[in-house]
Length: 355
Image (cartoon, rainbow, N blue to C red; front, side, top):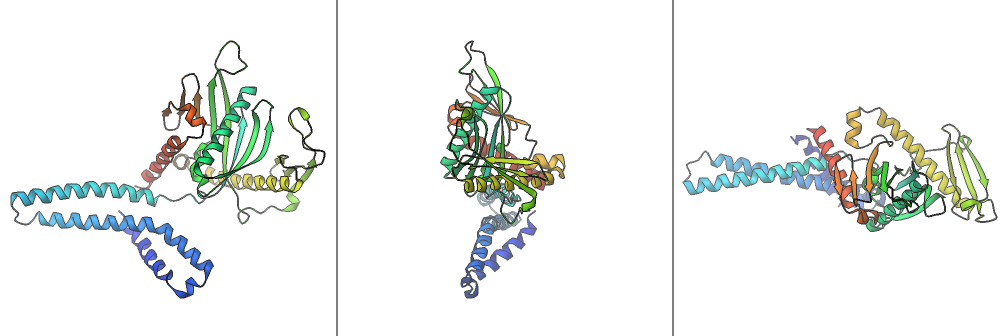
């Protein structure tokens, strides 16, 4: 099943020699590149060697069965064969998982957009809950966060909020959070105690690198205006807010949270590049079959993926049928149970496709 992995092992051995080569050691850029490739191959090669050793042990024990053994020795060999086969099955699954093609964006930072959907102010308040949830999760993971753009409603909610999460593996952790999140609860403003259903949309975008997206200056229009707070209250008296319009696509990005026009422009450009990169990724995804799209978890962002039911204290992810009765912990950033389950689900889909 794993004959082609020998190529990885051969390359791994070659890289081991390179890492002690004086010419490579003296070239810091080459050494770093070699070390990274070596580290990426190491778990695959180690697991493959474990797999080969088990195969050899199994073959050796089966040969013993052809010999004239007494009853005790025969039973001992049969027990060994059973144990080896069980371990081989386990190692085979682990090796398959290691061979799942890596998403090239997995180690990237992410830009997350949360938008209030149906439900008016209650939807905006729920967007604020989701913002806090993801910021607390990022903190638990040791990631850095940066609020890039907000459109607040003044009572702790957001019509829209855009923020960055920086850290190795941020996209791999959060990429399955894109979609429509639904909340069922009694709003604080509801005197009759009637449960309302509201929604917010989450989009998790891998940060675009400069080498991936180049923007022709003639393709954008930059407008500056005075920042304003909730209800039109002036934040400052200078034209520090920036609005960038990408003319070919019609994408408009506004940033006004910083007091510096330059910083607002930098943030707006970063968001714009990421959106253009995401458009390209979506175009590529559309070219895949529906089956392939489901395997990589890049479904329609209009899909309802999760429900937060406060009266029953539960959170349900509809894609995998997972229900947790830890809604308070989840809202406080304890998302590992859901994120790990989603990751395992989509990895299993990919493994099925490999068989």
